[in-house]
Length: 111
Image (tube, rainbow, N blue to C red; front, top):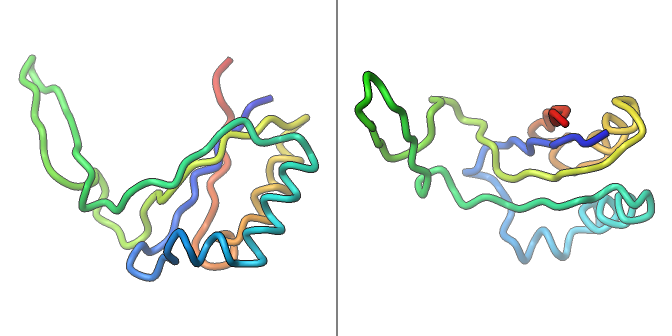
């Protein structure tokens, strides 16, 4: 079954790409998902200042800068994984370094 891990954190304290690459916790996480053959894809997202929100109301397209939600924790990236079940997806999410500082939301994919 496919799952998306929504990686959430306060982007004001998020590490740089260089810090992530050098962090042993990230290296261990990457090694674990590769060992399991679970990773299907993923990406780190740019800061919410670069976001654009689109809504259509009564046939009119409304475009606004920034994210939809007003919160300090934002989705900073996603991982797409393939697992046998939710328990395995949770085990992988628990190994993600952001689970210790923000949160990782696990969402099953409609197939």
